[in-house]
Image (tube, rainbow, N blue to C red; front, side):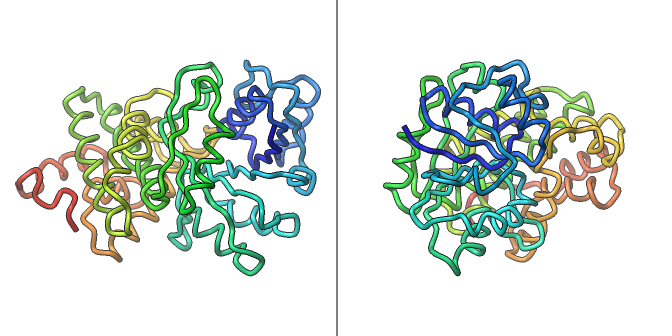
Length: 339
């Protein structure tokens, strides 16, 4: 039995809390929403997310950060990337160096271009060097709590920390593998959201399986170029945190990022789409961050460029698709993964 603090009670944080509770761990789930806290503690459901699934008795919700963190051995970060730094600063007085920080957030901080592992180290470095694990892979929250077999990856520079998280969080239908490639694991989980927006655009235009297959394959090449330029390993991008997550989020109807792209492809405005969503579609902000980093590193990312043009430059989805197809012809494997 391990004491686990989960910061963020959206669908993924709630799902991980349910799984950890089913596994017999003591879980404190932090939410800034007092109505969610009350619903979990009084009625054993998250009234906003995954409301049809019972939350085990070992899970306690709280809106007090110090209570959530008290005695925690694992701190699981499940809030959107754009609020992670703010929350870490708030958590700082209650953090201890023996805690393991597990990021289940798939995003990049737009203002700095930093991955979540870098944000964690930024905030905590004055106090101690954090033990960090990135948790990523193809995992819709609803399917995890429904008991569907799911495989994800725990990545850490320290193999023993990845193995500890693997041992504590794996349970029945949730199987966790380990690796030591934090960079590749984080980038795979983040940049696939950009490709999911593109895949949604393909669906919104009414295009078929040929188009989706091409998008996924060329999207993987693009993610690999971006990740390898920052020290990732190609094996990671071919695994659950790369190809696996990319396939899921580009084809699954539960993908928020795919939904955004689909609605754009149908002619709706971005502001209108976002305003009607309860949860963050990380791909929208991640597109801006990746576009900027890729230009800085001189990494070729044509799909990302076109998604950025649609989201932030007013380009029509039809024109973006045409632009990609009219690029100069080339060999498939030449420079697909090389820098």
